[in-house]
Image 1 (cartoon, rainbow, N blue to C red):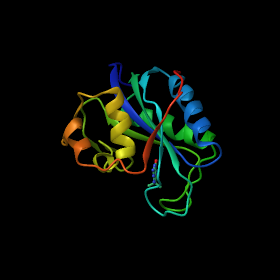
Image 2: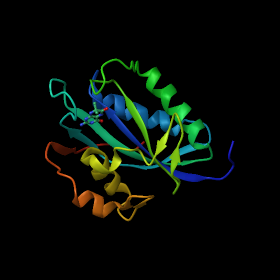
Image 3: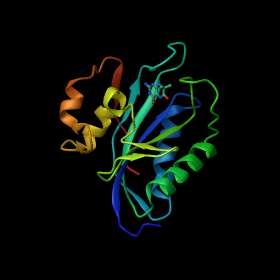
Image 4: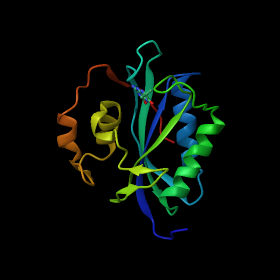
Length: 168
Ligand code: ROI
């Protein structure tokens, strides 16, 4: 256990079984992880699927956490929440009830068997960059540069902010 508090960012995604509800419930569950609080979260976004197109649109969001867990303990917590939502890893890039990706963990770069931070696809995905920018516009991503510059390099086609989202 690492007693230092760090700020971490988690990407949420769902395209099965009432995706908006999956994401809202997951935000509450993130807030209940040990030694962890959700400081802020983005609105929910509807996004066209990346990967096979014959699957429903996704709902995506990003949460900013404050945590005293170390990165791997936080990953364990994220995977437990995914499992509670009935996450089964079947089709690669196929539909899922809940995906929780550890995007950033303080300013650290981590490359272990289980975990790569920053998330390796982060800089290519508008459905991550846009909600991240909504809650942390001035962020510098370790090894990748300013978030605002990464955002300028991706298309927002197929991404739509869903109004009326609530706070945790
Ligand atoms: N596509 C979108 N739009 N949002 C996601 O969260 C998402 N997650 C995935 C794959 C299947 C790659 N496609 C996605 O895991």
